[in-house]
Length: 579
Image (cartoon, one colour):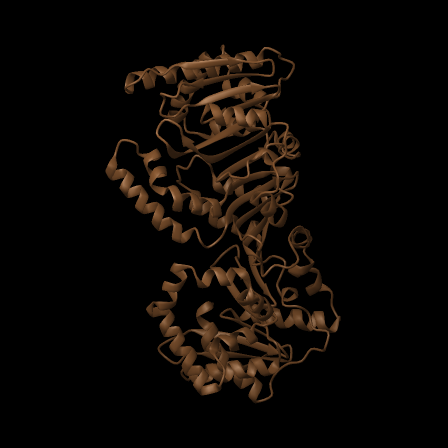
């Protein structure tokens, strides 16, 4: 369908110039009203001209203009060819082609794709221009740029639409209808006729059929749109059922452990919107078929209902952070059961090794449930006192759910202590120094750590109902001592409030601080990852320097979400700091 857009516009010019435009009244429906409820995919761009104007003047475009890959894009041959077309059109008409397109779709642009039970997908493009003059200007431009075609006037229920057919040997055709500021174009004639029917019905009010089965009246569409932001640049809606046939055909004979087609049947629809204010952020809402959800879903939702206490414990200097409020054991059990038998046998061996370290307690059935649903972690930097260089450090924390078993903290302590002892023995054999396990006990907490001779002095501690595993003893003590404190205002707090305030599952990258660390200590961080290879250190340092160019585009990257009983909400993208 896309290939007909440029060649169809001269045909629309003919409609305008000979006075064959249709008018169905002042109270015309919106472009989404002209889309059927059973559409497979609908992309809507609202207020294109106004949105693009704000975007060009906004902070994200300022960042793009100084972004090296974007600057190179402006210098390549493809963009130069487009610029030549822009200049040519401007000389011929007095207005650039991009400006004409913005006016042509200035109020709305809708792309609708239908997937029938048999046959190939069908598509239609529906637009609403700033005004009728914008259509005429754009069509006149395309009439000059495109070759001659055979044009045929056709009628449906008394209203004119046109067929634009390329001359032989091509058999391609496009069908177009125009009314006031709106037009539609498709290579499928029935879709154009359907738009005419809907426009007539909705404008005159003589029939409720088109209104009732339009996408804008679909309960799922309405419900998901209400869950999204109202000031987005673009919206996408995907109905799940039309895609079932294609997914089933593609999954036949597949050896993937997870059957995507079966998982997809648990989805009713997916809606998304794109925000371009102070970054580029996408919100996604997955509406679920509650009758087809797996056993244990209700419990999963219940355990994911709160807010993670660890989110407010993330240090402001963190480069990477994760936090969650969800029961891990049921998810891992489901994933374990989906794994093929051969791989499952190997994991069973590892599972039994872990079980032996934790007093016979099964990791999936006993240990993980005790670790609780509230967890968080972060990566930061510290100065290695022995080698006086910057290295990575961090911690992972869990809020313990004791489940009336007061011996479980001791079991967890014993299992982790055994693991540290094995790790110390390994480092002692492989390294040049003896590594030992250091044990400390106070009234409030117990700490275990590898001695500083270890390449990675891993440590863990238990304080009250919290377990913390850290990359060093100092980080462990600092984290345990700050458990009862709330971190002061940070970049994470600011971006959370602006972009994903209602999320309770999070993966966060602080690109602003990562840029600073790589600029100041990139060589030392490279040495941290490759301590025994000068060539590898040099290669990593070069990659870090190269990556710093791409890290300039935004100040954060994130994936955040929340699980509800009938839908899942996900927010991802990159944000800018507010100056």
